[in-house]
Image 1 (tube, helix red, strand yellow):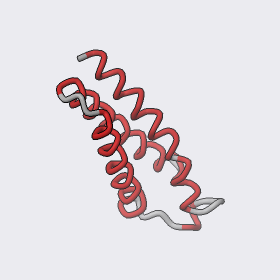
Image 2: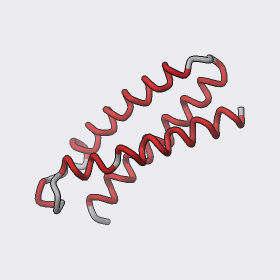
Image 3: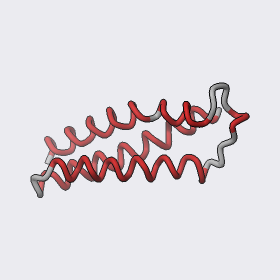
Image 4: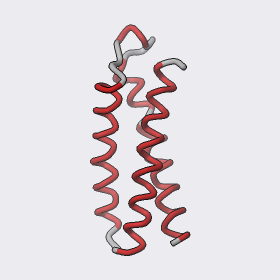
Length: 91
């Protein structure tokens, strides 16, 4: 598996976890802005996890590490929102 796919799976894993957590929490406490803030914090944590834990190097990407990490931004927010809505409606 190449580095770009590993980065994407880390972001998607965090998005599923945080989206489910925010959906369950929002079903109990009606504070959607707090859920958005939690998602933002976990995006930063996942960004740091990708750069530190996977020990990415500039040579493993054609366009550079920062551009590959930026490609995980949109899927993270989309999957987070889908799981937030899904879990919120189930509960």
